[in-house]
Length: 564
Image (cartoon, rainbow, N blue to C red; front, side, top):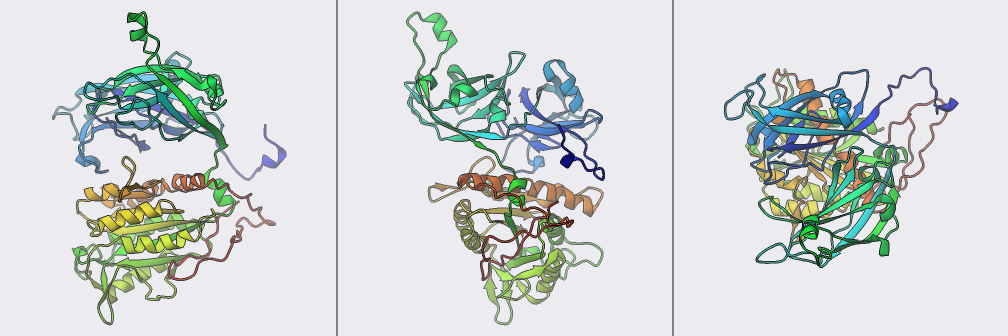
């Protein structure tokens, strides 16, 4: 029910319902849609994707959806590197309006474009199944840890490699996958790492809804062996470690064949806790400051800036790829910055007057204050640097990452969060040092965006983007995924519309920042401070800093949230 304080006759708000779409396929491995991508599932023709699509549903609108399915051949994010298997069109209303909100449609190659399966347009290639459910407003998140004891041995030459798969039940008797644990190799008494998932993913607000857990033995070819299953509920799990949360793992086939069958082992809940899930906006409203830093590649592989073939060429008619990427991301970030001051660096160039090579030089040539005024100031400093430095090499990332990380290390109380944008044209020269820098930075309030420009192959760069495999160095894995890498060419509009190209790029590279900020706050158990109230009739409130800003070359400065 709305209160008087909620009513504002001068505003217009369209009500929307959050809908979670779960996808599975038959005869297929990785799904790309207009609003995101699933994870990759190896070696299976019948994938059941854990990653969901959450959409705003408007009854009065026709919300068209397109789903493309690919067979993954490399770690590249470039879809052209993978085998296109087919696509399917539908509307969100079509999914919701189907019986039980479950829609099954045939996937086929598009006859509307040049893509095909084995050169045959319109070839049918399996089915795609959608399940839709309205999400509850529950914002709690559950963290739990489980172990098992005396699981069945499934491997002929060794013990089992067990993992757990969690499903929530649906009203029609089916189950929706909501989580997979990691695989514990060669162990019949595994202890899985603790994991966190939203309570609404586990039960969608119905605490007595059945939660089914399957126990599998992992096989490299994807034909995982079923060990057994058990059922529980959120209410049961919330009791924590107790005799009520020791579950017998039962295999129905074994139970039916063997009279003396007892179980296939047991699974025990070691810990369970529930916390309120805070949002990115909660932290911004509470005063968390964003610090945005830019680093641009000035290596010789970019070509002579005075030549039109150079990626740094300053055309009087249009921006080059570096300027487009910088402006696309910067225009979004600067909305959260009151004083519009951005530290900006270059790397891989020889500097005047003595030709010393630098991998973290200020674009404005001011070693004491690398800040540039607004994104236009960064662009101006970038163009000025092209006229004064000599492009050289190598392409070293670690120095500037470590420089920003040193600043972030001084601000781990939740009052500051650092975003580093790096724009480059080629392969990283100091990959080992860069991976170590990323692993170290993963424990800090920091995110790294890497935009690749030009025609180079960036496959090796995918190693830093830890969406599938977490970055590791010297036996240590990054505790968070903080790197987002994209090749700019994937976002260039075919008609040459630069504004559209930049909008596409900004949307994709910035999409992970809120979750990365939240993952840091959760890892340090930091809660947002109370929102700073607006004063008088002003719509923009200056949020006071919690403590003095760091000094030196980190270029940190006052950043303020734009609040109503």
